[in-house]
Amino acid sequence: MTRPTALKIAAVLSVLVALIGITMFDLPNLVLGARESASPFPVVVGSFASDIIALVAAYGAWRGQKWGAVLLIIVNAFWIVQAIGSLLFDSTAGELVFASAMVVHHIIVISLCLWRERVVRAA
Image 1 (cartoon, rainbow, N blue to C red):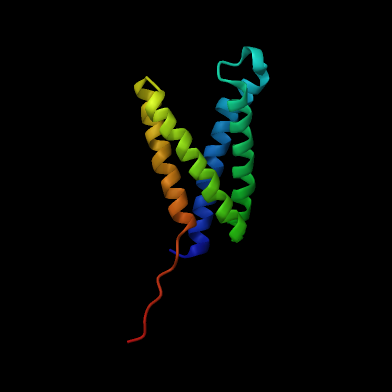
Image 2 (image 1 turned 30 degrees about the horizontal axis):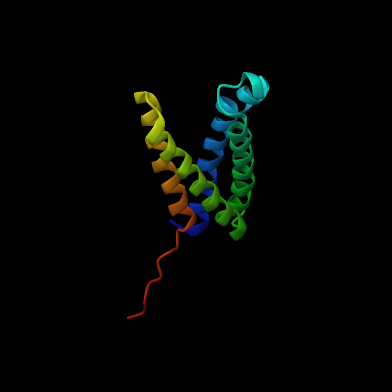
């Protein structure tokens, strides 16, 4: 696999997670507001911000820009911390399975951002 292909796959995977986060968590809680939201409102705002940053980073990675790959690595590292927190503190089996899948997803995205093509040595 070439580096541009790896970056495009990483970008698509990150866009999917960001859009899921925005539609399933961020927007519903932002609409409810600080008083009505089940989650702490700073967490909701932070989640929304990280999802928007991920979309910007995915654009840069898709275009093959180094800053996009670096920003995707940073966002996915942050998301790994969130997923590990979910693994430690969530209680239902569904939440644990989702958090586990997210840890794997974020590790894959970071690996794709760090992807390098193999150089064949002359004999």
